[in-house]
Image (cartoon, rainbow, N blue to C red; front, top):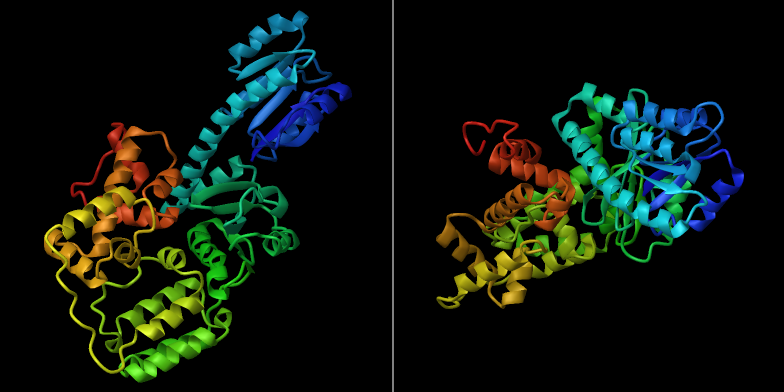
Length: 470
C-alpha cells in the first residue's frame, strides 16, 4: 500500500477527500491529515510517505513552501497540489517545484482519482526501486548504508524489527510495518522501528483461507545482522509446511531433538527395513517440534542420498521452496519417502524412451521454466522415468538436471534485466525463483556479480569481473 498525507486547513475538504476517493481500491492508505505545512512536514520527517496532497493556501507554512521543503529532501515523493482558479499562478510555481500534478477546487473526485492512478504507477515503480536498493545493500552487508536507507524510510535508531509472510498480503498496516517489499511469489518482508502487532498477526493466520505463514523475529536486529535475520525469518514463514496448517512462528525450531535425528540417520539409512519404518514413524510424529524447513530440507536430501534409497541423487530437492511447492506438508513427503524405500529387490533400470525424448524434455522446460519444474513433476507431466530424464540431460548437456534448470533461468533473468524495467523481485518470480535471496545467490554464482551490478554493466555504469563466473 502507498502511504498518503493530506494537508488542507479546511475540515470540509479533508472529509470530502477521505470519504470520496476509493483509497483502498487504488492501493493507497491515508495515514495522516494536517491543517498546515508545518504539521505535514513534521509527520513526513518521521514517517515514510509516498504521496503528498496539499492545498496551496494554508496558515503558517503554505503549500508551496511545503513542496519546496519536501522536494529538497524527498526527491521521489509524488506531490499533488489543490488549487482554486484564482491561485492558478501559484500552481505554475508548483510546476517549477516538480509537483506531479494539480487539481482545481472544488475537488472533482473522479479527476483526482485519475490523477492518483498515475501517481500509483509512479509510486509502485519507486517502491520497487527502493526495495531493490535496500535488499542489495543488505546482501552486501554495508551497515552504514543500510542505516542511512532505513532512516530515509522513517525507521530510526541502530536496529530494526523484521517479519515475513507467505500466502497473505496487504497486512502491513495490521501488523504495524513501516516498510515492506516483495521477495517472491506471495512472499513479503516487513520492517519497522517498533515491535510488530503479534495479536493482529495471529488473527490474520487464524482466518487465512489458504496455506500461509507469518514469521516474526523475536527481537530487534542490529543493521549489521539483518541478512542472517531475514534468512531466519523466511524460514519461519514456511513453518506452515512443517505443521501442515497456517502458522504464526516466532522462534526458529531447532534443538537437541533435531540433532538426534541427524545422528541416527547414517545408521538407519544403511538398512532399508529400518529406514522405511523410521520414516513412517516420523510422518506420524508432531514434526513442528522436530524441524524447521531448513533442517527438513537437509534431512530429506540426506535420506534421498542414503544407501537404502538406491538413489544417485537425481531426486534431491534444489531448495526448500521447491520442496514446499511439490508437497502439501512434511508428513506427506516423509510418508512418500517411506513408501519409496525398496526392501526386497533393487530398483529396475530406467527403460529407454526413444530418440525424441530429449527434444520433448527441452521443449517442456523452455516453456515451463517459470513454474515449478521439479524432476518429479516433469516426470509425471511427460510420462517419462525420472532417472531417465536426469541421465539424458546429463549426457546431452554435461549438466545435471538442477544445474540445467538454473542456467536456463539465469539466462532468462539476464534478458529481463536488460530489456525490461521489472524489479528484481518481479524478475526472480518471472523466471521461476520464488525467493529473492535464493535468486541473488544463484545469479551471483553463475554470472559472478549480483543482478544489480550486472545491470549497471549493461547500462555502461559498472564493470564486470574478468571471469564471467566465480
